[in-house]
Length: 142
Image 1 (tube, one colour):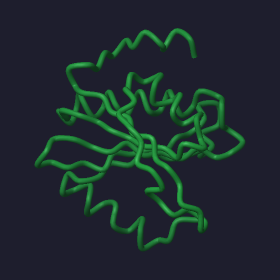
Image 2 (cartoon, rainbow, N blue to C red):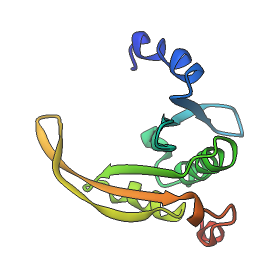
Image 3 (spheres, rainbow, N blue to C red):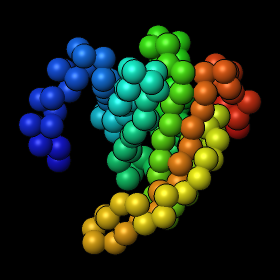
């Protein structure tokens, strides 16, 4: 559960152009299955993509569909130059989502985060506006 104090900051950050968050819902019944967003750095015209998907919905294509839509939003509506994301290396499924939406692997930050008392490596991915295509070739293979 996300503390309300965290959620309470979203509107203010959105109004300042620093953050956009979207719910990921299942079309059939509007069930909330995750969230996705961009943390925007206006000075450098880039953003970090972040998302979570509820475990029952892993490996169903929802993450890829949502990530593709948010990347399009970032480039087409927000005029971003670059979007980047990272994932724990022990979660290669998140890396496949990032690859499917056209991001390129850019490196690894070794033991960069401490999650549940374990230092974890982060794989880094990014895509430039000049590399973005609204009809990414991988979309037919979902």
